[in-house]
Image (cartoon, rainbow, N blue to C red):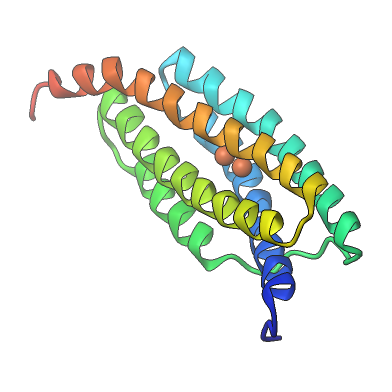
Length: 166
Ligand code: FE
Ligand code: FE
């Protein structure tokens, strides 16, 4: 289905993002399990809980626009998660794996920040204030997650830097 106007484009992006969030919800427990740093592990678990709420917000927005909450395969998130899997599977020292998990997670967060930013712009133009508020809440959470990952990276990257090369 091709969109013929901005409202339809908004729905297409809602469907893409719903699928992206669902993919991430499945990936986050694996990332938490693969992380050695306790704060990073806890961070992934916390973001899993937030992601569930974000999916709930998207479902509310589908109701507001009167469309079924149906996802549409998000190839972008699939690729980002695929790269994240390589971080999990690689046989590296713990700090290096953790640093790589942070890199993968931040790429996924930036992808989501772009998606929610775009959808917030559309909702604003379409005069959908309730949808806009819900999108802004999620956008703020994604940005906070990204900042928290940057803070964790400061110490974890330092540890990775000082691993002995074999
Ligand atoms: Fe999200
Ligand atoms: Fe997120």
